[in-house]
Length: 261
Ligand code: ATR
Image 1 (cartoon, rainbow, N blue to C red):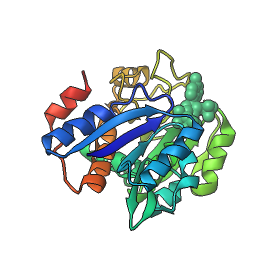
Image 2 (image 1 turned 180 degrees about the vertical axis):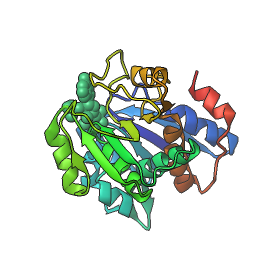
Image 3 (image 1 turned 90 degrees about the vertical axis):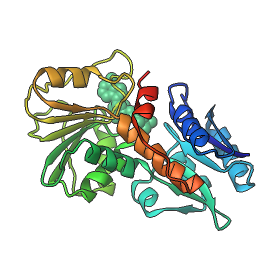
Image 4 (image 1 turned 90 degrees about the horizontal axis):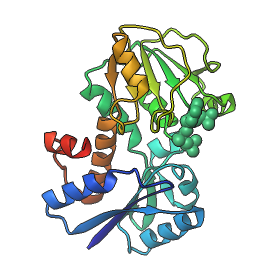
C-alpha cells in the first residue's frame, strides 16, 4: 500500500487527509493519506523514509515549506523560484520538492473568473505562502504588486526575490483592484486592523475555515466581490494527487460540500 502524509506544526486543522482519502477511494487506489505533527528533527527523519521508499509522497505545510528544502536532492523551477515546497516525491532515485500552491492559486483565480491582467494587487502578509501568490500573479500579468506586513523586514526579504514588488508600511493607504490576505488573521477570532473602506474591488482570503473571515464579511458588506481559499486548497491538492498517482481526480460539488462541513 502506498503511504502519503501531510506534515506540519500545527497540523490538526488540515483537511488534506479528507480530500486525498476521498480521491483515493473514488479512484480505487491502494493507498493511505494521514496527517503527521512533526518537529524539525522529525522532518529530516521522514524525508529519509521517502528516500527509502517507505513513503510515496508528502505534502508540507506551515512552518516547514522552506526548511524541508535542505533535505531534498532537487527542486522544480516553481519551488526554486519561491523557495517553498509543499509536495515531495521520488523521481529517478532523486527526492524532488515541488510547489503546487502557485498553480492552486492561479486555478482558483480562474475558477472565480477574475482577470488579474493589468490589475493593481495589494498583498497583506509575508509568510510562507506569500512568494507563491506573487509568482502566480506575475505569471498572470498583473500590473503592480504592493505588499505590507506587520513586520516590514519580512516583506523586504520577499522583495529580494521579487524585485518588482513595492513594499508599503502597515496601514498605509494603497489604491488596489485586488487585495489578498495571506496572513493567519481570521483563522481564530482576530481582526485585521487596517482601514479597508472601499467598494467594487475584489477581496481574496487564503483562509477557507471559517469560510467567511471578518476580512471577507466586511468587504462583502461594503459591496466588494469576495473569494475564500477553498478552491486554492482543492487545486493545490489536485496537482499533488496527479503527480503522485498519475490519475486526474474529479472536482465536483460533493467535494466542496464535504470540505464545507
Ligand atoms: P510563517 O511566517 O511561519 O510562514 P504564516 O502563518 O505563513 O507563518 O504567516 C503568518 C503571517 O501572518 C505573517 O505575515 C504575520 O505577520 P508577521 O510577519 O508580522 O508576524 C501575519 N500575522 C499573524 N498574526 C498577525 C496579526 N495579529 N497582525 C498582523 N499580522 C499577523
